[in-house]
Length: 93
Image 1 (cartoon, rainbow, N blue to C red):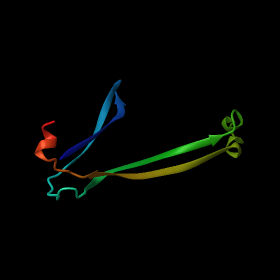
Image 2 (image 1 turned 90 degrees about the horizontal axis):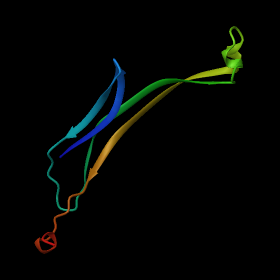
Image 3 (image 1 turned 180 degrees about the vertical axis):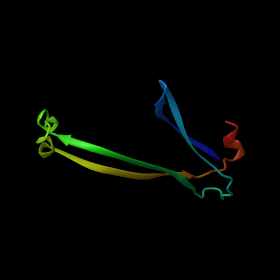
Image 4 (image 1 turned 45 degrees about the vertical axis):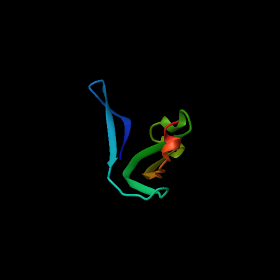
């Protein structure tokens, strides 16, 4: 089983890159049982600025009218796979 996650990445020389994350595995699972695949982690760090328009841009006193905060997001993609074996009479329809 192979699963890919493609996203638009950064721009270099006016060309968008494609970020690819993939999970590939071989696993034995009984009929109707669930296998969980993991390991695709995404970490995002950014700074967000909230400000009062115009006042937050003023030199010297602008800092009083704006707030900057650091945002750290971490997430994991989990894939749940439940195989089911179909009877031959159902599979041929």
